[in-house]
Image: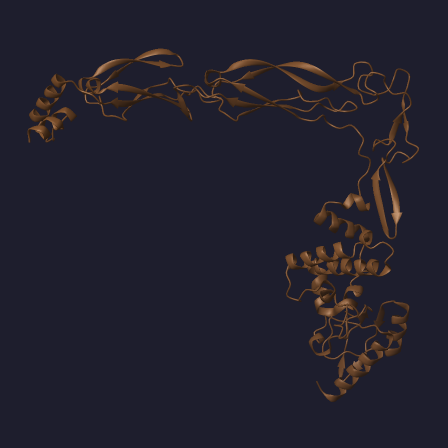
Length: 461
């Protein structure tokens, strides 16, 4: 850039900044040389020449300026539209508020650390805990403002780069009470206590769900059955048809909350909302309540409900009966009834998934020679063939005699586990026969002596 261009640029920049405004041109080819200085709609080559007084006047009136063609340094420039814009926020050297110091965290603190610090300070400086203390109210506002800025990535970036002035320049005007209540509600779950929202809560509501614990036998769980249970539940009042009003009466707007269902009390800068004590959140009152249900629209009754238990359910299964719970208020749908099953154990049969297991004890001679035994299944007795030489722990499977799969025709198996019983006492003849058998099989063994034989040998020796 030569001396004449430099001088013109400095004069233009000085004149423009007099009104605390700047003009910036990103479309000009000379923007890299003169930025920040211009914003134009048509490209210009080289340096820029302008009527300083017209530009200054237009800045005062916040109107765009059209600069006519001028010669400068031997070059001709086309017409440009110069638009005044607000200067970008500059990084503040001395910040009025240090949000990091207010929350007591470092600039490298992550979201969890910031949230934890704010939670601690919010509880410490909460006005309800410091009634009549204006300093606590100020501290609470400050930490809320700091959290609102630092918890928002975009606001935090602007604050880190330009400080509090940058936030004000971006349109931020301080903490909003609704945002504070939202933060408190997310952290502590009491936003509605502070008046952070919520309308009437006494409108039509669906009925509550009910639970009934039912014990069934092992056979009923495998094969399925139908049970009748008696349930105590709230049902729609037959006298008022669930309206809660006596014949000829009607609902009128509550005069305490004026139909809102909630009342508000002001304490300092806090607005505390609670459910209306007169209409209990409904926003309406009944002129003459029904004498049967006392205005609730529901009465308690005992009802017999038939429960169909499908074949194949297991212990801990839960059946859902839609609409068999308590009746809703003001015509709302009823809740559901959940029947939780508890299956009593069987004396001899055990279950594993879709398979049933039973242990059968056999004599050693039976498994050595083979036999046919009778097994009691849930479908009745069945004959099972035991092959000769069957070992203890072997399993004999009866196909399709197990538990049916829910929603399918598939069934598991009934499995017989063989347990071999070995005699603990033998007669002399039995012992001699077994010893002879062992010798024929080449089995080495050490004959044991009875107590009498040991005594006899002791005396003879």
